[in-house]
Image (tube, rainbow, N blue to C red; front, top):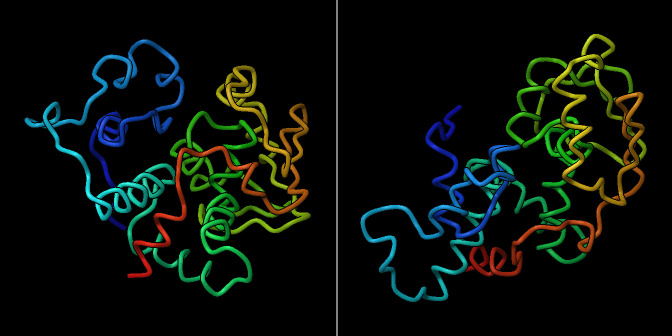
Length: 207
């Protein structure tokens, strides 16, 4: 499947904020936003005011890039969110947060969602004791996400947990010593600390 393999710091500059796509580098002075806080390209410093459509498009692109999704995947989540009861925008974010790679990232086992996706793909993660290597797997309430016994001793995981840069959200419960987390409830909007205005995404797709 197609993936963006270019410099991810360029994506942060395009959105004008830190998307935390590069793990620990995002917390240092080497972060591209700290050094060049303007859009990339020849005309990055001279871009004009955005139209309403451009604002809606930027919000959609921002959400896609945060979770590392392609357009077809993202559109499918939106269609699911439309069919759910409740507010479509919040339903969309709830689906995205329940992806297995995002849960692994939120629990602090990985420093970025990209690293979390790699951990899942390489078979380091179990759900209710069974190996799951599909990053888009939607974790349900009550399910336990943990690292395989051979993976719990990895030095990289210990470093990520020790860094503790992101607080574990209220809808997850973490047992750091056991390298295990449990989904206690569906995430609420206030639990999803993202710089995304989901209503603009709904307006874009509703045209």
